[in-house]
Length: 390
Image (cartoon, rainbow, N blue to C red; front, side):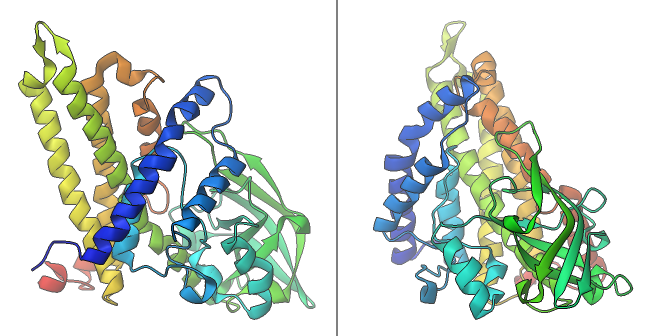
């Protein structure tokens, strides 16, 4: 059993790491300065400039098929790159991406939505969550009613990431209430903002924030259905599933960077005539953090490996999301404790991480939903102890 990286995997990972170190990290202090001054962080144009620089290195469309100009990287390599992105708190991601379900678009939809999104000319958002349907996505009530060759959309979507910046939304709506969302009663629609929906910013404890989207008799042509009528819930689960190994991959990068800061601080900060790293309490926090970090790393890479192997990744991805999200919260908490009062200030990024990573245990599948999936798979015999090695 080989736990090493191939030469190609290592080269791609190291190139991504070099780009993050040389081009992204130097912007961190300016980002913190702006946020301390209650100003927006980096502007969209500044982040776009970074993406275009990365494109010159060949980093464009990590998961995008080659026919669309992307890298079409295996899931394991994507996981490695997301870890590198996580090392910096600058909200950067490599360009050339589109929602994975957008590749179900028709040729007309590709020209109008998919290709401009890949090129960064348009921004999308994915809208399934509602005030009464979060973890229970099958309970959505947002309606789409047929009216000739059009559909009339009514309702509210909430906690939509990127909803304020989006030019169009991928909206999951109930089209057949009698069947229910899970059983073919929901459909995905591509809805331009110009069609009449509006968004409202939702303030949160983290930087930036999601939005509520409001639809009042928004008319959408039948040609804007993504996939097929009744396929909405299946597409939604496909969209959500990808985040269950990319989110914890990002968390590993955050935890590594934060733990490195804690180790450096413990080796230089002195109290009572000795470096704090000589204290057993500090040593144990560092040891626990490193152990959990490594455990999370291999759970996540295994989940990505199941994707590349063509196996059903849901069980492995749920374990990776559950453990990875909890790990980064515990590590950042310890790192703040090791830094003491300075860790609580906005001079350092630790308090920013502290607020940011708390979301990881909630969005795209709460801890409780991951536990439900994991236990249900075992209790109903969908999977076996030990996974593919069992």
